[in-house]
Amino acid sequence: MAVHIGGLLSLGAAALLSGARLASAHDHHGANLNLDPGEPIGGAMKMHIILMTVSFGILFPIGLVMGLKKHRWHVPVQATGGVLAIIGFVLGHAHGGRSFPENAHSKFSWFMLWLLAAQMGAGIYLKLHTERRFNDRARPFIKIAHKYLAALMVVATYTQVLLGVVAWLGFCYDGYMGQCLAHLIMGSSFLAYGIWLLLLVRLATPWLARFGRSPELYDSAMIMVWGLFNTFTEHGFIEEAHGWSHKDLQHTSLGVIWFCGGLLSTYMLRKAGPSDRSMFPAIILIFTGCAMASHEQDTEFSTKVHFVFGLSLVLAGFTRCVEILLITTGLIKSNSKEPNPFQYISVFFLCHSGMAFMSANHESVAAMENIGIDIGTFSLGFLSISFLLFFYAYFLMQLYTDLGSNDKDMMLPTADDGTVYQTVAQVSEIRGHSSDEATRNPHVLFDAADEDDYDSPDMGSTTFRNRSTTVDGISPRSSDEIELGPMRRD
Image (cartoon, rainbow, N blue to C red; front, side, top):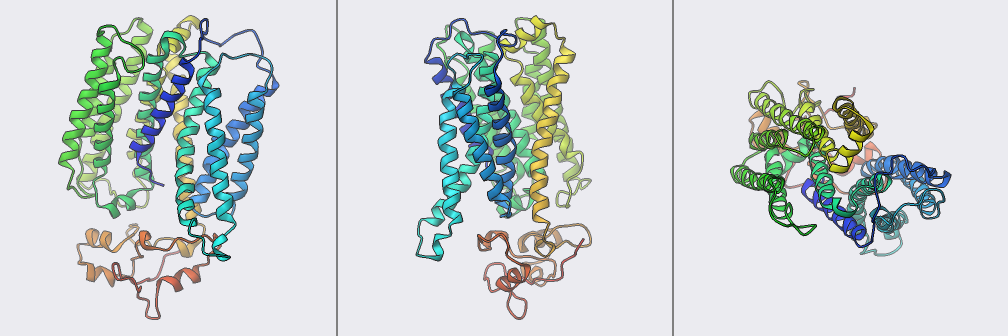
């Protein structure tokens, strides 16, 4: 479930850049904001939007979570989503009503179709269980491809939704493509950063403990790489630039500070353990927010929008510093079953900062000014969208947790103090015992990384215990030999 955010950001940026180049290859003179074109979009296009939203926005993400938990409804949900997506694809390319200029959304839809076909084909192949009939050497590779295609589908879906909104509104044509892409890519990176932190808070604590790394190490590495990317792409990368404006200088300097600050934090945390924390990623967010809050724009409305974005980043960085302070002083227990409510605050402000920055592109701001919307209404509108996105991400992660707790016998054992013990190494670190002493602790389960990967979703708890223990209750594994003791049932 924990996919490295740097890889996802690279995929998303590459998809947006490729889509932009497809769009720029055609003449779009006269394209403008399409809020009130006077021509209805037609029933076919409405059904296209509805079907694609249901399939890619609802069914496929839920099916992905079910697939990770090997739930029996995984295949029906994904199959239903596939049928609706194919119907929606046909309607999107054969609709009447309003005509749209040739755009990246239409071009990228073919990649989405082939990605969907590959993903569903791999799923059908795995469901046939050919290994029961012959020595299927391709199956392990297809399983890996099936999982990574699912992760790619999430990023591609998000990219296609953005491109769809751009096509609907008529943005990013002619000379606006560069600044439009900069806002979409950077805003998406902040949004993804927030989702990544939510993933760490909700689900990835055992994963981090197993790798033995500080949570901020991954933040720092991502900030360093993204800063390097920004340093060389903010001036003349998409479009030919003539001279350096104050905006070019400020955007490039932000890339430099991200790279330098990320490099410092990454080096400091290179040997740090899960209990070692760093505030430098949060400090970088605070400085970035201060710079963007004072970022001069062409209009007063645009300056206020950038101020809201900068304020969100400052609040995200500040609350992140407070969170780390509370964790390191023991006021927040990082190994408890449920995260402290305060840990969600910085995550939300990061998500909102991403939405605010995406809304701050020139055409969007100009459209709001022409309609007569004030900064308060504008900010509250995008704040509502941020709440919805946060809700959906939280819902999917909660669904992942709930599906894993349906079978009580498959739950990780929990001690009386509320600590969920995952591995022998984690128990040793928490209780201060040696590995040999932790081996005899009844509240220890084997390392999930060493468990065999089963295809059957209906595997019973008896099979689970028989495959992981012997007559004396001791695991035959040599690395993390454990005792499967009593489990608390809620």
